[in-house]
Amino acid sequence: MIPKGKPMRRFTLAAALAVAFAPNAFAAAPAPADVVKTYVAIAAATYGDAFATAGKLEAAVDALIANPTPETLAAARDAWKAARVPYQRSEVFRFGNPIVDDWEGRVNAWPLDEGLIDYVDGAYGTESDANAFYTLNVIAHPKIRIGAKEVDATVITPELLRESLQEAGDIETNVATGYHAVEFLLWGQDLNGTGPGAGNRPATDFDPKACTGGNCDRRAAYLKAATDLLVADLKEMADNWAPEGAAAKRLLDADPNEGLAAALTGMGSLSYGELAGERMKLGLMLHDPEEEQDCFSDNTFNSHYNDVVGIRGVYVGRYERVDGSVVEGPSLSQLVAAADPAVDAELTAKLDATLAAFTALKKRGDTVEAYDQMIGEGNTEGNAVVQAAVDALLAQVPSIERAVGALKLGSIAFEGSDSLDNPEAVLK
Image (cartoon, rainbow, N blue to C red; front, side, top):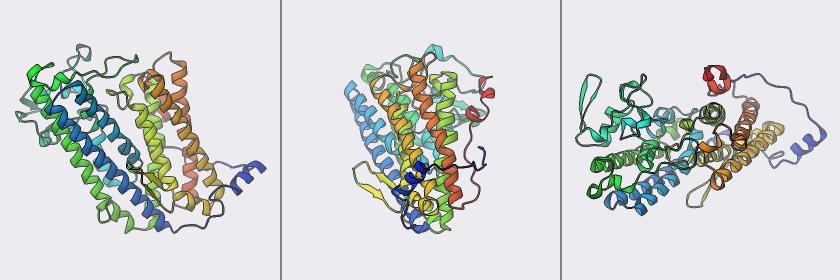
């Protein structure tokens, strides 16, 4: 929970002129219901793209299993990275939409204890006080026990992953499904700490004829089941945001203020507790590569960047689809500008500054070093780039709160994080 006090605002002549000439300063207010329609249309397009790109990942995985070579493995990894782009841009629809929140853990839960799924390096250890299934390794064991229950894992199916393995023993790090389970299978463990390099699983781990790692047929079966399940889950959410879908109808049939509140709740919670806190500040404080989200593939800097693109897109009412077409319409920005031009100008500037900070983070990731290296202890320059991105996120949150106030939506609580709200507890 973050403080809800309303800070005083002082205006200089320059600030007043900036507000006066801001793009939305004198625009007529759109109807709130039309702003909600834009929000729903962007959600439908974003989840539609996530589903479509997951389908391409599924095809690449099928090609890998049919012919395990370095080339087909590289193509599957590329397809996984491409599939992450629209999904990360969809995360702004979390926190304010219960249908999304109840579903999200199936597709993007992390971190995961990878020993539940497959073989691991000796440095991983053999047991954990927090997880009885830390090294269960279902790929190597067709018969397993989950608590008092004997589970037949002879055939690895989507149902086995979801019903028996996902959060086995009610332990959140037993992640058996979703993007990160597929990521682990495609890359393997990243054993480089905060040094250069991602996971380096060989294609022969999926080749029964030249098998490395053992159980190659079962590893391929797990990868196939996890990928098929991911596609099915994304189709479910894309359907939920279609015109007659449950998520769309919930907002379109309700008071428009509910949709406006959902949009701003997603923006604030993803900015503050989730991205700035749990995904970034925590790992930076601990200098721990295990706290990066896409830890096997070293794709984290791209995922963080796309979260920020998604946040900004919801506010300005614009989403560019994977095929290059654009979904746009009456926006929160226009609505806030009509209520209080100063708040809109302030929030727009903060969102632009955050996008610039994350563009710099992405550029560093593309050209200098991966995210786990950036947060490494002693990496002064890399740490500073990550901290600047965190600071930009934090700076935009009070402006989001002011937008809530300008629209008279009442009190909205954003997701918190111990790394921001109680850092001493994290360091103990």
